Image (tube, rainbow, N blue to C red; front, top):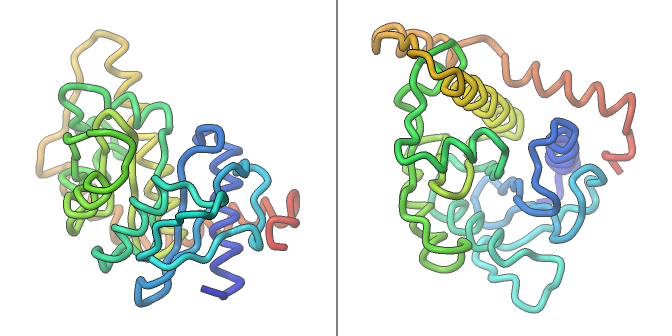
Length: 237
């Protein structure tokens, strides 16, 4: 993993996630694998996302356990390594404990109902893991990899959210809009009033429209990089 553009994309995503307040201190990780899934870039343990540079990202083997290297978070290398090894479409993985996605993950029924066009984007497209059994080491990591299957979004019960996809831009767009969708739903619940849930037909139609919207994720991410290029150009170093 030596492509400078890959490093810059991942550093930009980490920095902008911190700008949005979706990070959790020095916890959580974003990774990007090589085409064959045998190696991946990941943010180092202990470095704040708001200060991430392209050169800071670690280049790890997907079957590494990170032992003996204090720059590597053991839960991160376990979870991301397991998914990169076994899920072909998961070239990029983003995992957050963002506020509203985590609230949703804490509910007995974590279903995200189709109440607006953002929630409809994820209609029938979210895998749910309800087997939380600790901090993501060993069997936990392998279970998450199996549970994701062919989905791009996994709501991790009592934990947070994980997004997988082919590019940093696609994953960032998904994780951003999933958090927005969860925020809308949790806010709607707080009113105590009845929800106006769309029919399955309308929800599915809207989800497919999102999937075919021309260049949306790439343009979203290009706009983010433009902001960082103007205001924090050192992220590319």
